[in-house]
Length: 335
Image 1 (spheres, helix red, strand yellow):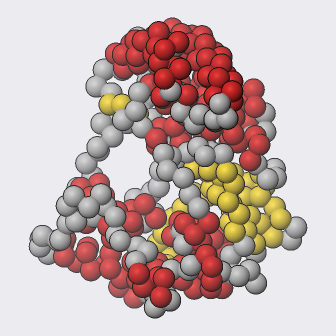
Image 2 (cartoon, one colour):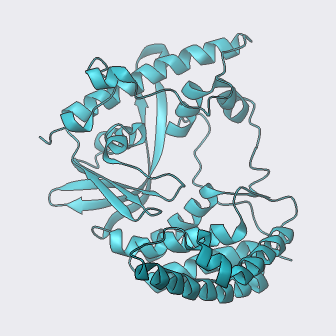
């Protein structure tokens, strides 16, 4: 039985405010209070296997192997073996090869009918011809979960492995240029007066673009991204600002590598985008300061129970042009 360490993450020092902490405060004060004020550990000492785990595995692989596809895949294998042991990973590799071969057969069947199956295992052809593989996968998932007592799986073990492998395979075709720097942690004081805070961020990747730099971020979560989400990304604005004030400028491009959907979104940030980002950040810092004052006073803060932590942004005001926090794609022009 393996004895895994706590899942590795890119953490920050005490007293520093990250974008994820700020987002927690403004969307659900209870989440912020529990995670960052009371310091509870919902990750159960790091034994929580979800999309964030996949992200960490993929980050580590790209940081150390970049354009070497075989090295990337081997890194994923080694990291999974670290947590689940050689016996489980051996079965995983064998079964993955069978599943990939079956996927190809299902896709060829779909081509006969002019179809491209995004989820081959959901087709009737798969269920008729390859249901036995599902049984083996389910057995593998149960055995992998038993390796680590107390672990929680938000998605099955086999899905975790497949998503990580898909991400690194997509990466080699998406990358625009070689890395100039990777995993750069930067900080700067943001805001003014009582609501000023020292903020920090870890930039996944910096690529050179002529006399400037592209700030790049990897995503490997469940949901896809579009241009408008990147234009109005609080994370991208914060990291853009951190790069510029720390001498890593000029920042001439924002790049989101969506490794799940196999797409690369590239934005040339202009003053319109930066002005909206600055307005959002300062507004959110002021709001967070108010929340902290309420929490210190022991007063219960409103919690958006059942809202799935959605803030309702963008709303109709972003469409009418009456909101200075949001930039619509059709109104965006490069400088």
